[in-house]
Length: 112
Image 1 (cartoon, rainbow, N blue to C red):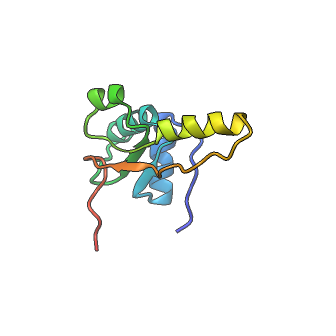
Image 2: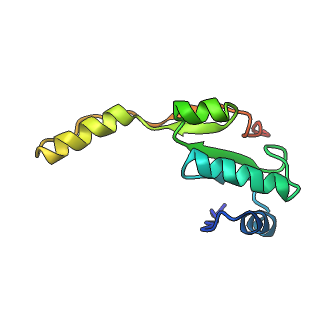
Image 3: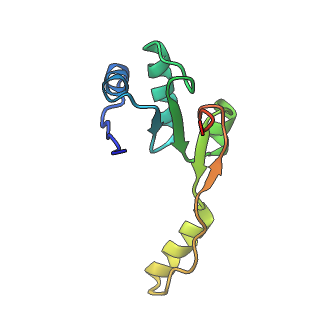
């Protein structure tokens, strides 16, 4: 499947794009946007995760306290900071762990 990019997060635009492309999942570049999209989808009569799965990125402790059920990716912030400092010092960045997937109730179970 070819991904569809929706550049506007306004409710009507998101709902229209999901319906037009029959999207079953949305990847949001941060958790705040994911919550905005979830609210827009639900206001538009769509269910999360029944109709559309939503995944955010950040998994910050603050956001997790506000919306504990959001599925998200957690960046390895300490590794990224260390690598950036090394690059700025003219050194090799060193290893960076991959993002960690944080399970949540905004992702529908895989059908298969």
